[in-house]
Image (tube, rainbow, N blue to C red; front, top):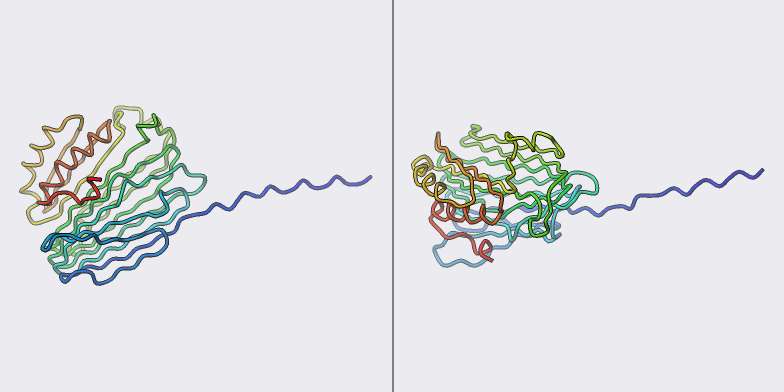
Length: 276
């Protein structure tokens, strides 16, 4: 009797993964180093003479999905000053396998100033993301940093029913750790539906100002967040650090609230990409 033929092996298609890296060094005299590789692009738009220099990060892959690897290193020399924003909101798509990893490292020299202002990160249903922000700054440097998470696409009626998220901040000033924050979400998870969870909010933001004047800004910040519509927020300040947490059911309400806070804290209008 002839043996039955072996069934053909079904091979999984090789899924294309995005790789991108960028390095930017800025000193008191302006740009010193610019390196970009893969899907990460860096652009420096023209600004008015004497204005704060701007850099824009672009992910040319159009979004992020499981298995992608992106990294960015920004270094400011002594008295270097820069505002850095993303071109648009970053979209974290449904993962077909693996976890997307994004690592951002910021170094601020003596007297340097960095405004870290990426636009929203939108997490699609079944997204998988591990992101890390590491900052090493001199004792007299100034950092304003904002990160926003949006869960699902409201315009599409999408609700996030499955999600893997790891989001970590580490900030060191003069070599000493002054801020460590880690967010971990694994859905579906019953805790997310309790009052101690996200409470129905679809958008969250964290804003940190590390500067000599940070604690003196607390009163003005609390007054502003007390007048925000559709946003729950709180602010604290200690040891040269001002922390603001914001949450909203509507991502647009959260964005409006951030605009009301960011502009006064930086003493400037937001980068133009925020207004497009």
